[in-house]
Image (cartoon, rainbow, N blue to C red; front, side, top):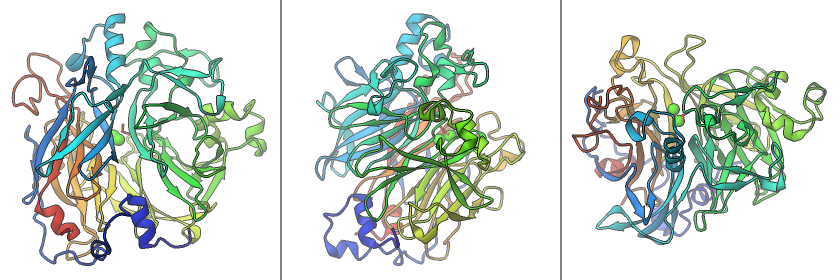
Length: 517
Ligand code: FEO
Ligand code: CA
Ligand code: CA
């Protein structure tokens, strides 16, 4: 794509039915010159919003969405598939479970089976009543995809002797395809069924949830990008985009409609990848590249490279071990690449780098990549730092990103519970939601607009098609709880155990920032 036009932006956002008079307010230049008043950081167990915004709980973990159908735990990525102006299907990732709060800490088969039913994703119909969104309980669209759902590998691939995997898990962030499916990414999969040691090929047991004590599912069946049809729930696992701790899968189209997917491996010193499909309308086959920032090159991970041919027995072996392949070709180690968004006005690719404990870089930054000729198919790029986390920015550990209709950038932070409100992180207090205005007197500054309850992070920010609602996940409130009788958070109900929940944020500040009518 040589230049990113307004038409492309509208296409990307799926709002092509808007009247021309509405489109004229999309240029991002009409933002009011009045200053936004930032929300002060807070360490309280409340969800706070800046003046001009208010929030409402949509759904919390383990609520019924249908008969024998429970909303899962630790909601993360959100995506919407409109059915009409007032009805939509909401996709929600359920990344993991904290047994002490949401199951039982004892590792028994019964507890693990329950936990398997709580992760994966939810599809829920929502409807807009009097301006705000509600869950439609018992809708025929309501479904769960869990760690027990049988999911075939795309293209008939056979992974560790099987054409299908049991379940999806560690579903962190994701993406949306132009053909109306959701991509859900399997991130920290090794915490569920362990990992296979690359050199010895021996099983490394899971130290976290330890599901591998009861089920011997191959670790190679996880760490992929899973594509789900929101209308039918049909799911497929793609091996084409490689296997690693996939944070997200951000899709854009080339000028000739070839899908390109950016994905980060959220681990200290891991890498940034780009997948270029071999055909439009499909992600089943293509070429996976990894970024080398020093040279500004996307390096293909294929057996045409002699360095890879002598290590991997075939293409699938290479994709299963994408991390090792990336290192063999000299990919740049990065500071935990998390969410990725494409600037709707310039086509620049923004990559949130949360931090790097190993290298002593605690506050993270946002990297900006510019593809040569602004062409997603390009083999080269330039890069610069868009925003550095730290006390000057007033923000630490950027994680999820979203652009609004005016091109303002919304950022959620992920300061780990183990350091939150302590030492160098004390001043940032709880995790927050920030907006970086694109224009006006505060252009380029990160302004805090919401504060998460204790121990929580905001994840999965998503605007409704009319941009009047920001859907957002509140994940892991009270995650530092070690005594069930004394939880560190009582959010959202003010008493009892904390519950991860999806909320909606609305208010005149959204309208001011985007000049919405
Ligand atoms: Fe699940 Fe990298 O956050
Ligand atoms: Ca994340
Ligand atoms: Ca995170």
